[in-house]
Length: 325
Image (tube, rainbow, N blue to C red):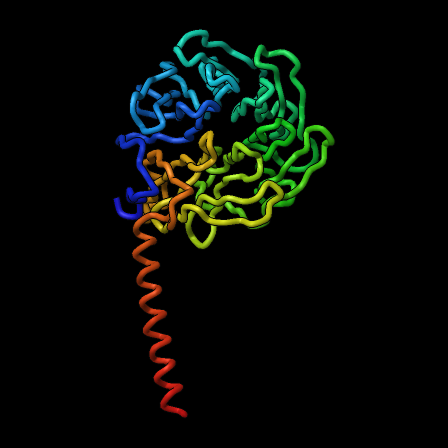
């Protein structure tokens, strides 16, 4: 499809199915990638090898099972589901057994992130606005973490478990913030990471998800700038923001997740129907950060064209300058 990424030496396509595959999450041991897919009878959690092989369906519920996150031992996956009639946090072992409900609250619970110490951060409306909560994996010790104005959503743990990065409207629009869990201190990381491609009245948590590098020094995230949704990387303090996979008018890229060795990022694309301004299909991709020119081939062509036009411009300028001497 026009506008989607193309495979190169540094970008590889891991899934290719007519139905959407989204929200990839690399296991802590580096051996598997969990994701959500509509390739069954409904949205379910799937697992595959890091090369896209050995696809295995984890959940088989006719309700929506979404937004998977690995446990620290890589043996279980947490997700949220509306199978009880309300959105709650659930977990399942990777062998398909021991499916269990973790939260049971009248409010909306979703977008879980399993932390390195075994606790699970998630988003909930149980206190009114969207806020970040935390709970033990057995369902005990529920506690609200984030406070203040605005909505807080889509938490992501640092590897040492001290910090949470999340999306918040506390500054007015949706931006990335960091919470020091030990001190309760908040710091704003982005000031121009917008999410305009999210269709009106449609919740897009995948688009806002972030991922810490294994060393805890970098954060991968999505930002919508210059009419495209890109994968960016920044330092953990919000500095040195760099695009690693630029989108284009037809395709956005988001939901990044780092590999164990920190050299690769898995992400999803989302094809845009320009006429209807609605999202279409999506697949899962992998970018090798050690390779140069981490961009889709369509952008490589544009870059070559830009260099050619710059050469023509400079040549004409030199000719004009020489004639005027």
